[in-house]
Structure formats: C-alpha cells, structure tokens
Length: 200
Image 1 (cartoon, rainbow, N blue to C red):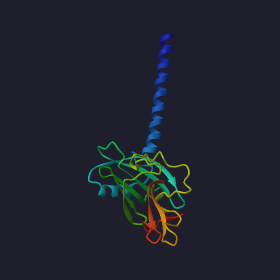
Image 2 (cartoon, one colour):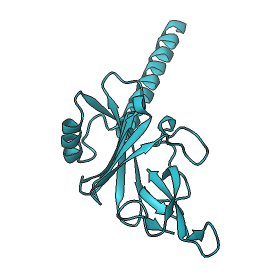
Image 3 (cartoon, helix red, strand yellow):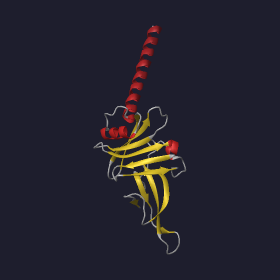
Image 4 (cartoon, rainbow, N blue to C red):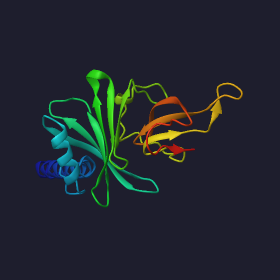
C-alpha cells in the first residue's frame, strides 16, 4: 500500500511539474515571439534581413500604445550575441514597421530609424535621466507607469527660455526610445532637432 501511495504521489508530482512547465512555456512563447504567429512581422523581418549582414533573432516583446498607435516592441539579437542589439516597433494592427534602433556597442552609439517621418539619427554616449547607460536598460521590462509627459519615440522639447535677457530663445530637447529619455540637449527655438519634435 505504501509503495502504491508513493508511486501515485510521484506520478502526481510529475504531472503537476509538467503542467507548470507547459504553462510557463506558453507564457514565454506569448512574450518572446520566437514563433511569429501572434503578430505580422513580415515587413520588419524583410528590413532587418537587408540591414544586417549576419543572422539575427527576435527576443522578448511588449505591447504599449499612445494616441496614434498600438505598438508591439521587440528585442533584436544578433546571432552569437549575449546582449540585446536593438529594438523594433511595429503597428500591432497592420504590422507596419514604425521604428528601429540598432545598438552599435563597439562605438557606444545608437542608430535610430524613424520610418514614420523618414529620418534617422546617430545618438552618442546615451544615458537615461538617472545617468544609466541606455544600452544596459531592459526596455521591454522598464516601460514607465506614467507616460503623460513622455514620447514613445523621437524628439520632445520643453518650453522656451533665454540664456540672457533679450537673447535668443532656446528649448531643451530630449530623444526618446520606447518611452525612455536617452539624452537631452539645448537647441535654438528656430533650429529644433528632427522634422516633427513634440513641443510641451
């Protein structure tokens, strides 16, 4: 009787463990998008295949939105790399490629592509508002809870000010990737960066 109880207990434990592992895989599969059945990545994959010389994988994903788009943001990892090598953002509903950021770690630069406004920027020595190296931040798991004062991707500029009385007007403008500021600068109000900066 004890042997039967032990066998049944062991079998129950194996079944529970197996179910738990299966559920975990489903959750990881939904979040990682290793199989691309959840979203339409055709346009993004075609672009990445033309952009990179070598092979790449898509890593974890997250969904977020603003007043214009429902985004799916996804890690891009070069084959053989132990780091995230960039992020892409597609329109969740249409599969359109909207943004892509390539981390050029050996040069300490981020090459950001904005396909909505058809422009790209090279960002150097990027750090977030807390002074952390931007390329070390897990953007998928660090989407800020309060998005009111932030831009999903691109330039955002504050109010005007003067460096001296009667002088020219300036604004502080910051560049955002997936809601996080990765560097700010001072710009003349008549020479703001980008073709479509958000003005606060």
